[in-house]
Image (cartoon, rainbow, N blue to C red; front, top):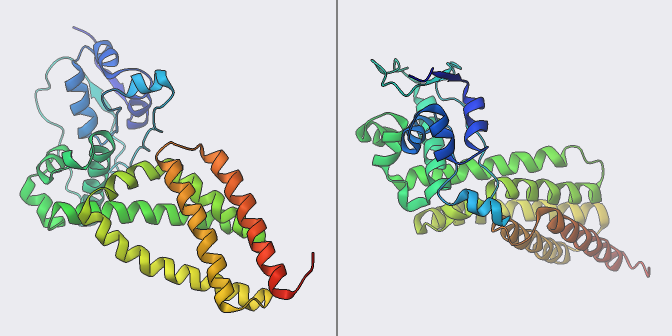
Length: 287
């Protein structure tokens, strides 16, 4: 009998993304399906079917990040070809930790197989709880997917803000804003685009986005008015046009049609020049 293998979640995550699941499973003395179940149980994302063909073709998407361990105990994972005599002791999670666990499981399922596979029954099974328990945390499947989309957007905003906080003036903040946004889109945009194919998710996020985008645009336009004495209509028009440019580039990056580095160079160059030209025209600078 093959000796059991003991790994941390981080080590298992690196192993499953280093070679095909079927190959790795044989090394452990398991079937590919058995290894996939272990990964699901400990919330370790693994490649979807066809991933390694995409790698060979140079079209594979970035691998999803390893979510936090819902249990938070860092307990090692023992992988053995011999059936265990008893299951791992279940840890009672706090309500917030269980919600985060369900969201993380939903993210892994959607990334691998799409929203159609993310039923509450499937998510509950992978999380190790009953479907009835899952509905205690989210009234509907759509509510869970909307919360996942909101979580991704919050992470994207936080990453963008972290870049902007390092900037020291208006134009460096513009560049940092675009750079931070596109970095986040490269990592999270694919999952978000998949979620937005669901009509219910798209409708909910459209409402959120409309209000937030309006606030952001008004804030930036007010800054241009106060700092450069640009009229409010011109400031709003400039902000709207240049924001749309970055959003369109982000969609191309998320769908892997444009490298993030190329999108960053194009957007920063056009946004900075457009902003400078608007300010010069507003203050009557002939240059």
